Length: 207
Image 1: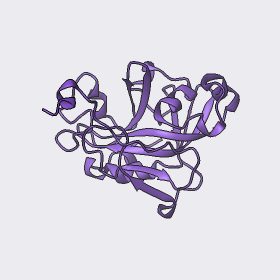
Image 2 (image 1 turned 180 degrees about the horizontal axis):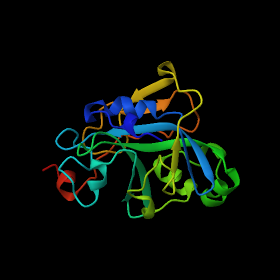
Image 3 (image 1 turned 135 degrees about the vertical axis):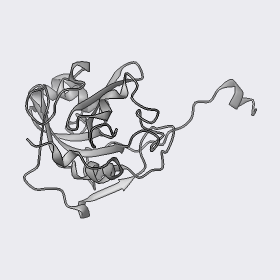
Image 4 (image 1 turned 120 degrees about the horizontal axis):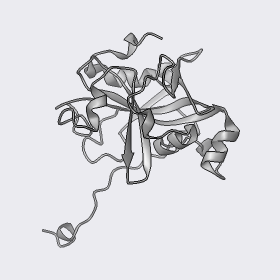
């Protein structure tokens, strides 16, 4: 599949993220329809982005090529998955936050345990577990079939009127930027939680 639709200027990452809603992602015998995504821009543009300070060893995948997977580990226990977007050298990525399992339900249930079907991929870490992914997906191509994941367009694109937008989840900076997009009313969309700074001895003492 052609990668060109993902290579818009980084400034247009929000629109690219919105258009990913309804796309399907397949891996490990499970296929998920994306219902919630979150956009992140690049160097000097977005303080919530891993690429804000340039191509670090972790974030270098965000600088291209487009259409590749960017995975990262959080809280010492969870993997998260992004689609790299933007022109070569201009960091941008879309975090895949949630989706509905549309094929491979039994496998997803086995990986996720005794949870309601709507929760199988409801949240970025749960989505990765449902697909059976780990660090080996990092940097692989999502659209040409050569990697463990395959991202395919929907038969019917999600109309703009069906999409809601709001602040990003769990980021310490630029958390009010409305670059999180979801299919309005879909039960698989994750719950919104605003970032709350950790209290330290300094803050508790009021100094």
